Each structure stands twice: as C-alpha cells, then as structure tokens.
Image (cartoon, rainbow, N blue to C red):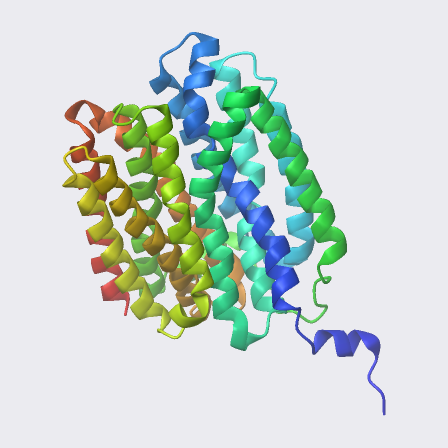
Length: 388
C-alpha cells in the first residue's frame, strides 16, 4: 500500500541548512531595523536640525511597536500557519521600511518607524514556530541557536551596515535598501520553504485566553522576566557608548564590529553549546553576560577593555536567547507561537527601553550606564535560576 504524496511530506522534515539560511537572512534584515537607527541618528538629527537625543524616540517607537506587534500578530501563526504569516509579514515590512525613507521630519519619522516596527513583528514568532513544525526534533536546538544567533547578531550587523551605508549614501538610502532586501526575502521564502503542514497542532480559542493561560505558568513568567533584562542591558550599553561620546566615529565602528566574531563563534559552536540543558544554559549565559557588562563598567573609558567586555557580553546574549526560547517552547504545548510571541514582546520591550536608559543616565557617564546594565543582568540571572 502506497502513501499519498501529502502524507509522505508530512512525515519528513525540512533540510536544516537551506531552511535556516532563508530564515536567518530574513531575521538579520528584520531585527537590524531596530539597531540600525542608532548610528543613523546623528545623520538624521543633522538633516532635521535637532539634538541627537530627540532621535532616540525613533528607536524606542520602533521597539515598542515591535514588542506590542508580537502580541497581536504572533498568535496568527498558531491559527493560519507560520509559513504564510512570514511571507505576508516580510512583504508588509518591505513596504513600511521603504516608506521611512520619505519622512519629512522627526514626528513623521517616529510615526513611520512605529508602523514599521508593528508589521515587522510578524516574522520572529512565525519563524520559531516554523522551526518547531518543520525541523527534525533532534536538530531543533541547533536550529534555535543558529536562528537566534541571527536575530541577536543583527544588533552588530545592523549598526555596522547602517553606519557604512549611511556614510556612503545617507540615512534615507539605508531604509530603501533594507526595504528591497526584505521584499527579496519574502519572495525567497515563498518559493524556497516548505508549505505549512496540514495536520499541525492549532489553537482555536481566542489569543488573549491562550496568553492568560500561559501567564499562569510560574516557570514561564520567571523566564519572561529574565528575558526582559537581556536586550535592555545590551541596547542600553551600546546606546550609552555613543551618546556619552566615549568613542569617535571610527572607534564606534570598531567597537560594533569587534563583537561580531563572538556572535559568529557562538553560532558555529551551536552543536557543542546545545549539549547543555536549556535551563542551565540560560543561567550560565545570563551570568557571564553580567560579567561582560561589569568589565565595561570597570574599563575606565579604555576602548580595549570595553571591546573585551562587549565581546563576552555579545557571545552570552547569543547563547542565552535560544536557551530561553527552547525552555519556553518545551512548556507551552500547542500554543508555542503565542508563547514565543510573549517572549519576543518582553525581550523587545527591554530593547526599546535601552536607549531611554542611556539618555536618562548619560549625564553620569558611561560607567553608570554599564553598572545599570550589569545590575539588570544580575537580576535576570537570579530569575532564570528560580525558573529551574
């Protein structure tokens, strides 16, 4: 007796390499839209004739809308399938990203960035749910680590790429090029990835009821609280380096680029890293990220020490993210896309508040900003330990 083609397809798994490549490239482009605005702020401020601090709301507006977008758009994957949601979300993100390039002033820029952030939020939870649906469970931890490495490495890639492109062609051109790239990713995923499974677990109840059920899980709540500290400290530290004038233009480029090898190495070492259980990886990674932040706080303004601290900090952020996602997915049942949406919400709520943390403390100097980041990560480590 022969099985139908549809049934055979449902019993096989998507190839890891091509799948993660397509998702990873899109992940870098999507999340780079948050971090790329940091080095572009001086260029936009100069054109609009305002203080650079006023442009912090461009990053914060995107981050807040991105975070809230997860709550509204993330659960769609549980109902309509992650593949379909990813393609539509990337196409919408392409249009709104290109629209940012025509902003006539600061207010319009912030509004367009809010819209951009909201629609971009469709991608991340859908991508995570797609991995769970399509990748062999034995290789899923590696897939999570590589994909999360792509998300987190965009913090550096987005800043370096935006700084280089902005210097060459202006800040508006960066958003035009990004929009074209996002549209290309939508087309790539439409034709290169497998369609959603017909028999995938679905959630038929209202998303808000699912969220409330998930938030009754004490372990999930502790993991969400720990995750909220991760990017708040990371983005706050990078914003603090720039806003306090600690380094000149070339020094900022060097600091941003020097963290990229740490992220790449962590992704390459995914096979070894994932041998450690997800709960233990979370605690260890958060703990060492606090050590990295503490090194920058004690640097005395030395760019070499700050670079060393951010190297360790960046590697640990890459390691912590997938460990938290894996732990959350293991405790969420069929509502994994919704659970990851809540995770993404709290993660990027922290990221959106990072620039404001730097603005609030910049008068006291970078060391105080770095100490605040260290304290946040120490709290996150304790919360992750309690979640075990």
